[in-house]
Amino acid sequence: MPRSVSYHDKLIQDLKDPLEAAAYIEVALEENEPKFLSKAIKNVIEAQGGIEHLPLSAKCLVMVRDAMRF
Image: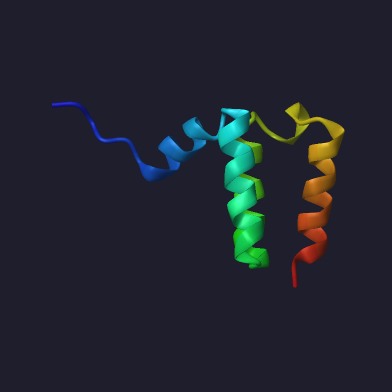
């Protein structure tokens, strides 16, 4: 019997696809909830290999996320 995969592991695997990551961020933006958006950005960063692997435009999103924290 195959082992089950955790939700987080599956999510990170899916978010390696740029189109999936973009859709995920779009949904997070539609929720209009800063904590949800922050978590979504964190998950995308993790899936893409960490902040050092992101282009400058994506790093700007992280700065916006950090500025939104209360």
